Amino acid sequence: MRTLFVIDTKDYDLNGKVYRRPSTRGIIIRGNKVGMIHSRKYDYYTFPGGGIEPGENQINTLIREVKEETGLEVILGSIKEFGLVHSIQKGKTADEAIFIQDNYYYLCEVRDEWGFPKLDDYESAEQFTFEWIEAMQGIVTNRHHDHGTKNPIMIEREARVLEILIQEKYLQ
Image (cartoon, rainbow, N blue to C red; front, side):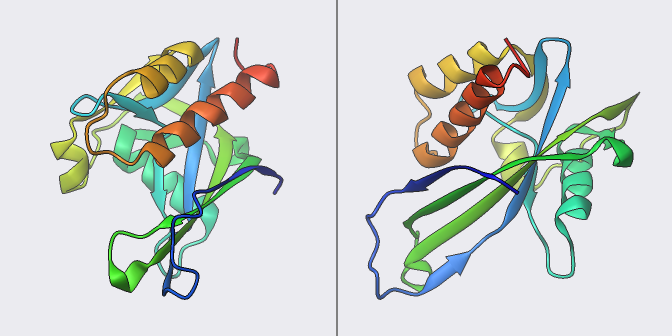
């Protein structure tokens, strides 16, 4: 899978313990809109997805996470690699002095039938909702709105992926 970009904050202790969290993200496009998760509490957009569990592969994680966060079922035959974002930053604890996350983005289509999302506690607390938006809405919201205590690296990552989707003519 191609690397879209790398984010390295260089704010971590090089001798610290490394914590890795690989994740997948679904890029769902309909017309000129992209399906994204909106955190109404912190007012940012993210692609549906999440961490790869032990014993899971990237595709199974993508299908599970999109279903959990949106209630939508990914069509297996529609999944196509888009790209990887590699990020390295200071962890939140001494046990995680260096936090490394590889986010694997996949283009995919979903069935028209809607189910009910099964949100984690933090997702419910952040008031996650699935929305069809224009790419510029996500970019402007992520770059220019106040997101409180949320990780600015994650929020900027999603804006940059939206920009690449525009540059490569997937979206306008």
